[in-house]
Amino acid sequence: MESHCTSPVASGLLKESSLMTASHDALVHAADGFRRIFGSAPTVIAAAPGRVNLIGEHTDYNDGFVFPAAIDLSIRVAARPRSDATLAAHASMFGATAQASLDALVPVREPGWMNYVAGTAAMLLAHGIRLRGTDLFIQGDIPVGAGLSSSAALEVATALALLSIADAALSPVDIALACQKAEHAFAGVHCGVMDQFISVLGKRDHALFVDCRSLSYELVPIPAGVRLVVCDTNVKRALTSSAYNERRADCAAGVAALSKHLPGITALRDISPEQLDRYGSSLPPNVRRRCRHVVTENARVQRSVAALRANDLSEFGKLMYQSHLSLKNDYEVSCPELDTIVDICAEEDEVFGARMTGAGFGGCAVCLVSAAHAERVAERLRTEYPVKTGRQPTVYVSTVEDGASVHPFRI
Image (tube, rainbow, N blue to C red; front, side):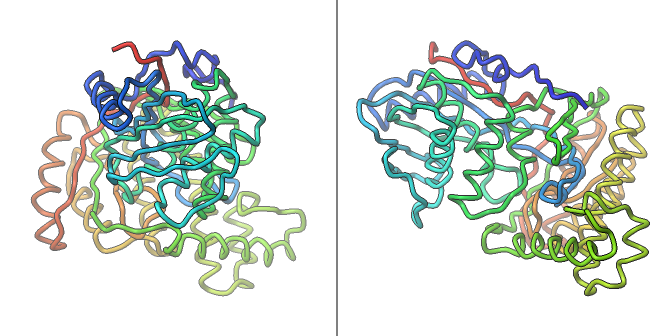
């Protein structure tokens, strides 16, 4: 895989790039919100998309492979420099304003969303970027807690806005890594790098195959005539209070135990399915199940990339269903609502595949479906899901969109 990118971020032309991830109306709305809160127009607006992971769940923090795509929901950050060293941020989705000093950036308990802003700034400072005090207005349509990476989109959009205000630039990979570190250090979520990578590097009508160890990546075209139907269970979960970090610890325990039989391994990425079959009996049952998911999921990702390159959507879909079953039975991060969505989709001939996407414990499922039937599948989910679960879903029909970008405010 090559490490290259055609995103506006890659060229460093942050102040001149066209904004692909938000509509003109959304930009106007963000600018109007900035004026309402701060009393003047912003000088720059940045946007970063949410994502679905087509396949490759809970593999990124195990040095494995992932295959996400950017969607047409985004976080927008309108910004303007200040004369002091203060970051003043207003998050419209929470109706709240918070401040932090660039001279003393530390995690805070409330409001939690400010940790993503302050943490991103702290990591940019650690890169040697001379940031300026900035007013920031945050707005978006990515549902919070749905597994569509609203946090990564907020980090990336904030990073691009702050870099533009500072008249500075970082490489796409450095931006993604800085945002990942912000989530680790300030939000307390030990996430992998997938979410930040796709938010920065996504490309319209392409999925992004990422090797999370080498950080190499490749854009793989998605065949024409398909859509993503994303169904939010509206079962909310907070990653820091969920079993996410427990699963990560289980994986580390598996590597430590298996290294006695396989010297030199450092992550589950290094273990083949055959090796796990041979030595897995030495693991506690729950740790073995966690390891089995990750090891087989890495193999599924590589097979799915080959299927997409061959335009074999049938094979790709089968791998999506297998992934969901593994997440349900071995990693135990699904829930009855996610399973219901996948079961409904599996009954549709025009659905190629479906699976949960994101960390799990609630959130969203993604369905790969022919464009001509996407709205019908979406309507079936809206109708049948409430009957079977007692909950109302939120269903999106999405195209695959470009990654993050930023431009000066000239509307």
